[in-house]
Structures are given as C-alpha cells and as structure tokens.
Image (cartoon, rainbow over all chains, first blue to last red; front, top):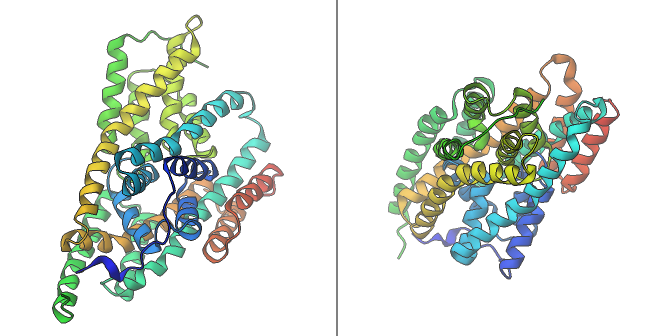
Length: 200
Length: 197
C-alpha cells in the first residue's frame, strides 16, 4: 500500500548549515526538554514533517535507547542529508547547549542556594511540565487517521497514562504489554483494510 | 565540597565502558539510567559527591538543550575532582565530558541510526507500519504522563497546588494557542523568583 495517504510535508531544510542552525535554535529554546519546541518549530512552523510523520518518528525515537530528542534529530537529519545530515543535526542539538550548561555550572556554583534562584527554577520546572503535557494533548489529533480507529486509540492512551503516571509501572512492561498488543492489533487492521480496499 | 582524587587511565576506561553499557539500557531517555549512574559514581567509586550529582541533574534540567547534558556535567565534575588542586581544571573537565558523553551516546545513536534507516527504507512493510502506528497512542500518552510526573515531582505536597495550576494552565496554552514558549518559561521563572508559587 503506498504511503501517500498521509499528506506529504511541504518543506525541507535548504542546506546543511540551515539544518545545523535550525537544530541549534531548537535546542537553545528548549528548557527542561526540547520536545515541545521540536513539534512547534519543525511541524507547525517549518513544516519539515507532518503531524502524523512526527508521531511516527517520535515513536521510533522514544522506543530505541538513548536521549529521545537526540534520536529524533539524528533521524530527521539522516532523512534529508544522509549520514552527514544526521551528524550535523546531532552537532546542532548538542554543541551550544553543552557550552552553555558548562558556563552555567561555573556561574551557578555561587548562587545555587538563593531562594530566588530556587523559586525561579521551580516555576520554570512547572511550566516545562505543562509544555510537555500540552504537546501530548496537541498530538492526540494525529490519532484520527490511525488504522485502529480513534476510540481504541483513546482507550489505549488512557490506559497507558494511568499505568505510567498514576500506577508508576516500569516503562519496559508498558511498552511490551500495551504497545505489543497495539502493534499486533494494528498489524491485523492493516491487513483487513488491505483486503477491503485493494490498491494497484 | 569537591573531592580530590587520582584517576588512572584504567579508571577513565572503566568510566567509559560503564557509560557505554548504560547507553543501550536508556530506553525512554538517558535520565532513566540516572539512578544507576548515582550508584556507580557516588556509591561505588566515590568519584563524585552526592551534592555534585544532584546539582548536575538540576542544572541540566534548568538550562536549554537536551536533558542528556546532565551526563556531560557529571563527567565535568569527575574531571574537576581528578584535577585536584594542581592539574589544569578545564583539561580534566573536558576529558570527563568527552568520556561520559561519547560513552552514553555512541552505542545508542549508532543503533538508532541503523534501525531508523532500516525502518524508513522499509516503511511500506506492514510490520513497520503496524509498529509505528500501533505505538502512536502509547507514545502520545507517555508525553502527557511525563508532564504529569514532572509536575508531581515539582509539587510533592498538596499545599503546592499553585504549581499544579501553573502546569495545567501551560498545558492548555501549549495545546490551544501559539504563544511563544519562551514567554511561558519566562513567566514561570518570574513567578517563582518573586516567591508567588
């Protein structure tokens, strides 16, 4: 079955340096995690990816070991420019943030005990938590095109949320049991769709 | 308090190998292996103090960029401890950053690169599509759950309901509006600085 039922992303990076600076900008805007920014910039603004492609890539980036946004930048860089693109995207994601975090470590050594600084960190932490949750809420719309059907997707998402956030079941078990069942069911559904609507 | 220690090349190699081995276990992000890093660096080898470990994680969360940079700070601090009073601090610190970051990144990024490329080349395969689309509801729920868990670790008592409220308002703003995310972070920082939350 062709991949064309998803609307193709309209745009792509112009050059390797566009890729590098785009990921640098993403990384420098991302306090307490970069994902919310990646979705906003690459999907909503630059349109390098559709929302559906983003969710699919994010699934791969999250399930493979390693830092999720680093995995994601590697995959996107590779998609547009091959191995060079992957390394450039990775460098963009890490170079300046690394320099900044080392500089902050040097500066912060003196003021870490200040109640103002701790309060500001607490406030930014609460905002960052909301940003990550809000990005998840926004992506729910991408489930409408899922072969399992929206109601089953919503139910799976709700079960996963309860298992991870409230019951604190280890991630590996959730991925294995809930994720495994979902993949098996999708595999079956894709076969059904294929039989009903055969394509040339 | 900084520690003063002498690390042999065998010690640096052991640090590198340990972080390489953690790399492939870091499903869901490098932060999931932080408990084991603490056990190894602070408990077993005594290369870092407890305070250095905690502040490394907190600082990396508060600064821009991927959270994996807490690993770089751990390496930096191990290097500073190894430099002692006499060694050139930034050389040792840089060596620590290099050893820990390459260790934690090399295995996982190599695997991701190969697996994602294979998956993309075979994206029409029914099994690949079933994996990506089947996982979609789970990974979306994981994002919302991560936000929840971060909010809960921020506000561990009921009296801290303003923090929960701030998190909820921001989740709504990100979901429903296009307001620039740095404004939101700035506002949160100011509210916290003033002691209102």
